[in-house]
Amino acid sequence: MSARIHPQARIIPKIRQEIKDSGLSHREAAKVFNITRATAAKWLKRDDVQDRSHRTHTLHTTLSATHCASRSICRSTTLLNYVKPYNNHIHRAYL
Image 1: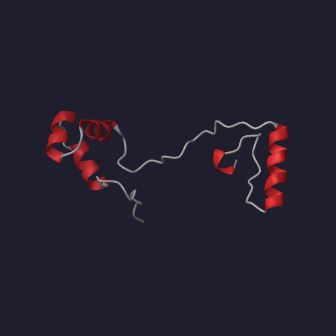
Image 2: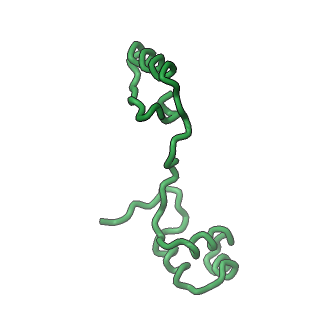
């Protein structure tokens, strides 16, 4: 099974591995591979060469019980999709 590559990724995992294995400094790797120093430094310090998720891992929106109930009523009356929050936490996309 092949790994899925981000559609906007300019550097494929094979090149990322070459950057890591090159033994160059981030400045030298940036010149050799024609990438920014920040990108070279990022791939040199990472343990793996696969894309990582850009989605948030924690939700920062907390709803009160009243707000949650009113959203539930609003969504059920307008026939919109609604995901029941866990511990009164809900993603902002569902607000």
